[in-house]
Image (cartoon, helix red, strand yellow):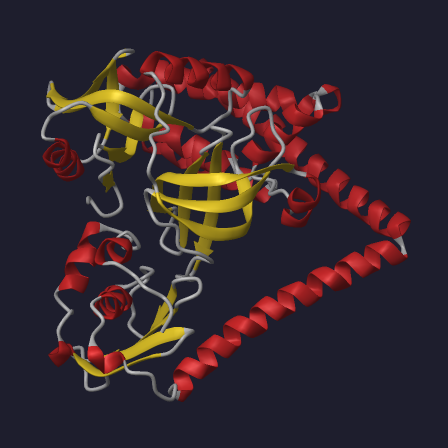
Length: 449
């Protein structure tokens, strides 16, 4: 069994604190009917409240898990507990024959990978055989989509004008219904990226007059987007890529791999967060910074229906990899290739706070639709302020978005001292995702440790 894991590395995989706590309660031999492992996987059957034990299994190569329990969290508490037992080198993990259910799952993962590879090769051969026909078909599809988007954004422009004509103060159940219908219309118009932006403005409207300035700012960005759709032929390739991204028009990953800017470096994981977009869709954002290039990179993934992630990324760990960046005015999102673990992070990648916020301001100026920008700030102190939380640094006081539980956990980690803090800056507040102290010890939002 060549894979070695520590308890800290396993807990870093937990989707939230509750899962980590629940998993710790299952680390007992009496809870597990069977345990097994080999060079590819670990598996076990955990007795739950029902008569049939839950079957948990983990692919050690990618640290991807599967369990027969009904949880939609990945890894679930059973998968985490299984890895915790494995990290403890429990003697019951002696190599043995795999059960059929483990073999079937590993085989299905290999089959899916092979099918994706074959489909990509087949598509490439098709384009190579008749590139003119393929290009014409693509142009026709794109033209049809732009036509639908333009129809939708024209309706949105009229809707925004109606809101100002009616007055922001006249907000009630009828307006809420109208907003929901318009957000659904954006999805129908093949511009799904606009629906969450409308929901954000709706939530602000519901908060009352104190939020009206932010509501107007949201409307302004939506109107700027409407103008962008109308004038798309005049936009630079980078600005057009920004527009497509904010509309929710996904870039083809194969195109990114083939044409995206390539940066090979040793990359440090500085923060990550997993959120539920809705009841069936989860989003994971993993932020890395190149040790030599100092380039930030965002690995953004979505999992539908409780599917697991392709790869686990350990907080405060370094990986040798090549990043292929998506096109845009501010290149952040990337695809990782040729990834191999390179050890625990040793050096600090933090910036002076003033320099970090200056870089963020420039990024938002270059791309006004940017959702967030990563900041790794040196010598910052978290403290309680007027019932909320603030971060004190050389750049001044910064509003912070963090739960009370996470904030107290971070304060316990730092002892109230200044430390390196990493977070996503939205332009108005910092969502703290991670921290490192002067000794190199790390704290991350996902596990609270």
